[in-house]
Amino acid sequence: MWSRSELKGRAKWVLKQCYWKAVLVSLILAVITGELFGNSGSNREISKTINENGGMPYLAFIITTIVAILMVLVVIGIVIDIFFFGPLEVNIRRFFIISRVEPADLNELGFSFKNSYMNVVKIQFLRGLFNFLWYLLLIVPGIIKFYEYRMIPYILAENPEMDSQEVFRLSRDMMNGEKWNTFVLDLSFIGWRILGALTCGLLLVFYVCPYQNLTNVELYDVLKNKLFGSANAE
Image (cartoon, rainbow, N blue to C red; front, side, top):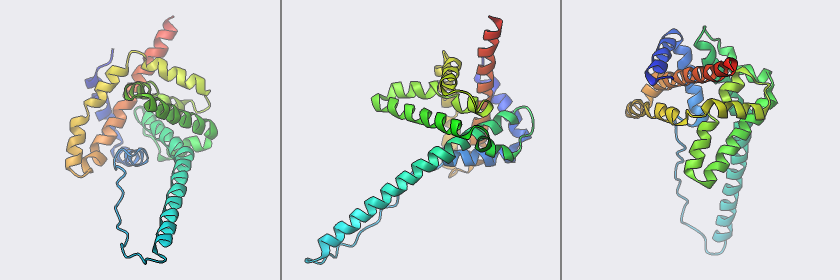
């Protein structure tokens, strides 16, 4: 049985060994997952001076153009998310996995782009798609599935060539009976995140995000050893 204090204690020790790299990599992860900055669009006013004869068609043209541009941007964003951000998240998890046992090189951020790239892309895409579909049903099942899929990026970080069914099965087995404990572990960082918000994100960048990322890696290591340790015992 693991405890939050043990995971956090080990995470703090690792953070001291690789502080600046951990800050940089955590910042990248926070940006690509939207963890640090929310989507805040700026409201722009359209001039109300519309010519009676030609104004409405012109306004319709402007609105149609804006909608078309937004749709193109959404498609581009989805493509970037699937083919770049998904694999990059796996690489970042790998960086933290290595950091807990030895100094990790920033070159690890390119790992999955050179190792079973399309397999990583496919599995990360399926993870996001399944999460989205479960959330469409109800919030609670969506949250449960979110935690069930929690270990997928970590598994891919060590096994980028693994079959998708096996990856999902391993994540499900690792999180079996651990979803609530992991949820409580996440809740234990709420105080830090409130303080981070009060510092305009500075505390998040320079301490909270790397601290939490390293704690999550410690959790992955514990659950992996628990699963395979029990398997070996059998």
